[in-house]
Image 1 (cartoon, rainbow, N blue to C red):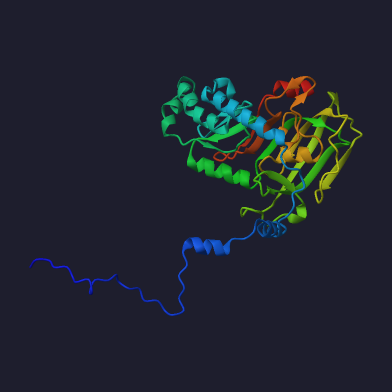
Image 2: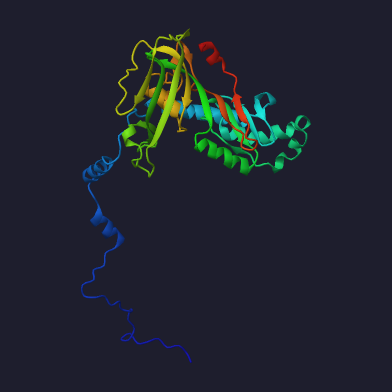
Length: 342
């Protein structure tokens, strides 16, 4: 049957039945009705932030942004050409390998270089090199880009899980060497306890111990942080044994001024917790920021020299072997700046 259109009197658009009380608003209209003035929104944001703990260490210096970017680009370029050497190996067996990480190289670069190192060492290690492609390499610990020293890599998932648990349970003992520039300490040995967490801007900061457990912006919470420091030398001279031992429980901002009469201080650190940037943050709080650590108020230029990274070295790791149970101590040779400080 041929199609015949309906007469004009019959053709009409379909109707939409709405209850008498229904009112239609477009998304644009709705958004306009919910718009809040900038001042009201700012007041709401400030009131919301009042519920969060206040960090006790200062925000990152403005100069650190450009310097950190430059250092990151330099490290990326260096990492693209980096390869491990046999001389970098501090300890190795069929389950793990300990390496001396250089400054200015990312941990991931070290990890990526391990298979080539192990393959190339087949004549020395027999079958280990032949089967290295079947190994599952994992970073057991991490160091900051500019921190040198002991880095531990496991060769299987099972061993990795055991070592990660050992680190988490604080059963791995660590020592670090740091060369600092700041106020001459009036202590020989000090234990500092504080809170640790990310501020609203994403930077790691020191918090009061009373705030441990409280929530922070972004959903994280403040965790405890504890480090023991021992002064090795001040201005290149051996530390005075008459200096006292101190304990600090952080509850307020540091009262130590970083102005005038700065001196070089070499310290050994014993972290009792494993928080990100822990030693760097605690050095800053104690008024002896690490030399070259611009992120945490360390000097960028000192005595005519410019530093391309902070001077922090992971000196040793002590732990129980995850397979044999034997006590293991791994020491990394000190860098030149550390031996000069001694």
